[in-house]
Image (cartoon, rainbow, N blue to C red):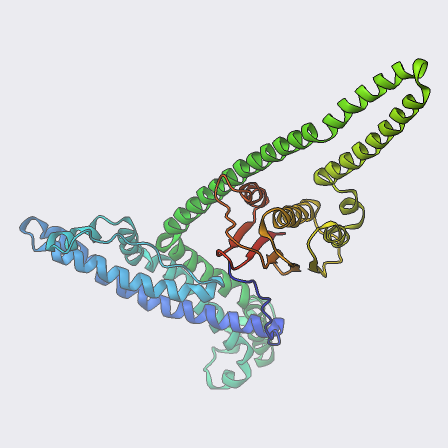
Length: 437
């Protein structure tokens, strides 16, 4: 698996809220103003081409006309997807179009005609003038009201006015004269300017969301379904890996208990029974037997402690991953070069998985690698934890089923991570586990 590198980027100064507002206002305005003539053009073009092709379809002339209409609608749809990206604040993905299976003429002609997204593109081209006209009317009205009202002093003198007895401000009960009229128009300009951004933003979003629904809505829904199915498959794989890892751990624990503490306890019971019989006939022999039983008890306790460390190491729970790995490295029979600067506490499941990755890897190194040194590295990055164990042994390790690392691979996958093993024959082994936070 390729090594994970922390990427450092130099962030440019963020624009001020006012600058972002002005920029978005300009984007929305140009989107609506350009959308209106495009809407008029597409409705005239597609309506004429579509009904011409439909009417002449019976004599086959309409088929190439309909094909040209559909392909032209695709072109306008591609342009519209590029235009609505800045309005919505994100790039609109290009949808999937059906491709012809062969190179034949009829295959090339008929395949676009059977593509649902192509007809949605055509439908958008035919009816986009409706939201475009509504949005254009609002945007033009608000910009004209804001600019005209705020600049009333620059043009009021040049406009002829009706006689004072029919002056508009006077009819509205606001007094008479030029001053009242200017104040009224300026107040209207302030209102339009104050509501300019939300009105223009709403108009642009109405038009853009209509386009997005027809031009990429079905494709986005299809991608969401695919992502949900992929996530479900990953969850099922993780569940299966967790069950497999748990079963492997239970079998190993059962074997270790049977081969170790259970055999010692059986011997301990036999020694104590023999000592009980020896107390009346040979006290010295009974005393020696009890001393040997005490030794067996201490060894059994040591084995039980070792097994408990394999289930839930107390030092990992109490002091964290760094201390637990230090203790693990000190018990290894091969010299370990430990590089684990992870001092902060992590999620318990993440710490436990990382610990068992290192523990199992060191156990395999001690048993099978014939290595002289082991390097253990644990690094934290933005996405999780990278655990790497490398030795200079004979190599040949594998995560395939039936090998020793298969259970470790199941444990890592159950945690949502990925395990990679590089182990050429005679070239040592490097085991890398990427564990997500």
